[in-house]
Image (cartoon, rainbow, N blue to C red; front, side, top):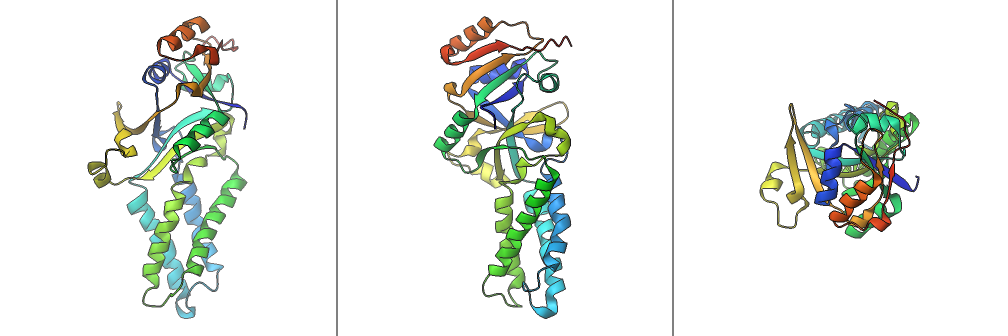
Length: 294
């Protein structure tokens, strides 16, 4: 991973990040990749029955096929009923690509926006400081072979948990399977946000992500210090998109690149930063080297 990662954004978003001292992590399943999250789960569900049948010592001899089928069907049912409708994977997306034309064109309103540079080491240190197990900064995995390896490893964890489950009897086996599958999904929810279709590989994405299953009753009864107090919903022209507001320390921003079609000067940005309380001596501000004219 390179020293810096960049969040490319529109002028209004940049202004909000600087003035509010907050960033928004937004719902990944409302992003430009319709396979987000679901693509990896489809791969896992496709492989699950086959990998279960390779195991000869998981279940009682006479009912093996029945229990193989039950694991696969309950896992899919639990995903569709209890996880997929209510889980939120919210992220702020960065790129390792510095001053990249495709990023300018795709995410900064006709290259009029900004790229906010953050040192990976600084971001990692801040995540460690707040010690929040649901927030992680990780590189996106695009490689199909790695997707395949992960799906098999994830299923292997489920199989091993079933194998190690003690006291399985004909009377309680389905109850035990349900409990094991639920614990398995609790871990999967934290991992699914870091795999993406290989066609997006040029984006070189690094993702700051918050992953959690949230029930409506949890929102109604949330405590004063709950992360859920920072959860909001943005109504757009044709959708409603969840976001999570996260405060950041001002020293986290260490570099800003002005988009090729933005007329602001580095001094303009330095003045904006100073007015909003940033120590401008520690922030490099440069104009894009791109000669793009739109």
